[in-house]
Length: 212
Ligand SMILES: [Ca+2]
Ligand SMILES: [Ca+2]
Image 1: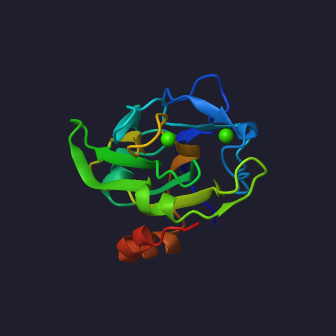
Image 2 (image 1 turned 90 degrees about the horizontal axis):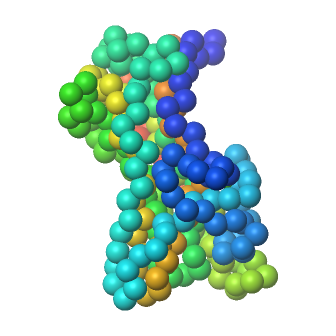
Image 3 (image 1 turned 60 degrees about the horizontal axis):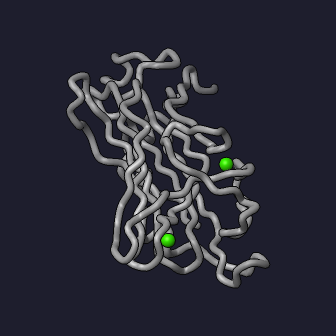
């Protein structure tokens, strides 16, 4: 039994001249990180956080906007009866040991654009600081790429999702170097057995995030 329905709400690999977050990119060939050995692979480019404020901690926010959940055949009645699961996935890295980082956030919204359900978050400070490092030929402390993900049930009443990335720099340096690649946000109607597990243990599954 496969999923009866599935919808890709957002899929961004940052390979194009523009991306849904309106963010600037670096190439892997610039050698600011270790190679991205994850699946899906990193391709040629990844997102960075743009210019920050020199000499102080600063944040840039990149929004993909408010995205409709009613796509790919997903029905409002299915969301409201707890039948739709979400899968949020992204890859993260950073510049050496500087301490900059990126976080991916999703806030579900109801039909009146009011927040409903928990704020989902991937990446962030703790996740990024735990990434390994190695010598990539340019830097002795280039950082690894790590994947973070979260699985759960779309809250009843949700119709849209506000998807955004917050990029934070430490006081030192000028560029905001939270690196992001392969952001994927999908909805599906899980197989009957999986749906039961999610309904019973959604909270536990939401905590079972992959670590680098
Ligand atoms: Ca890429
Ligand atoms: Ca920086």
